[in-house]
Amino acid sequence: MTITPDTKNWTWVLERPCPECGFDASHLDAREVAGLMRENAAAWPAVLQRADVRERPDDSTWSPLEYSAHVRDVFRVMTRRVQLMLETDDPEFENWDQDATAVEERYREQDPATVATELQQAGARFADLLEGVPEDAWGRGGHRSDGSDFTVTTLARYAAHDPIHHLWDVRDR
Image (cartoon, rainbow, N blue to C red; front, side):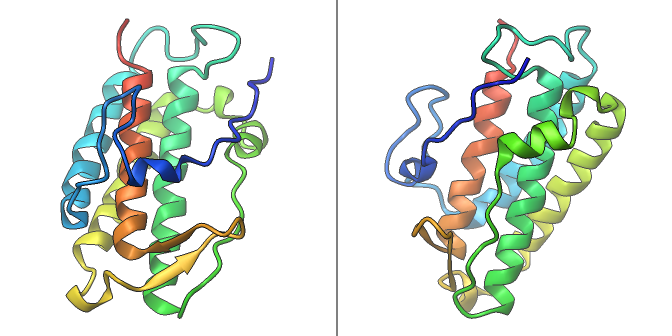
């Protein structure tokens, strides 16, 4: 059973609060993102210990394990993108199909304890990178192939929403 791919362009989270999870990246100071990502990464091991970690709540929603593996990979992808922006003038980011990755990497079959460790490590690397951004580098740019332009500031704010939103997705209902 596969999940219908999410084809929305989520860059709107840079302009207004998310109506689902309530997170508002539009007024977030990018220098605060590292702390938020550390807090977020620290919350996932409890999710990965739940008895229902592999269960999808319905046919169109990932399981807590799948969301956790995705968040781990979000941290990894965003780390690479920020690194590119700091090292290269106006890089174009490699396309990332998160839904194809979930299938190819078999998120549903991964070991929850391994995902917990990897997610925390990836979150820490992302936070460390953001904490080390030189003051004069927050305005450096990069772009996706779909035409979405980012600075280190806006990419950090954009990246903050995803893990926070997905922690909301797996909350106990």
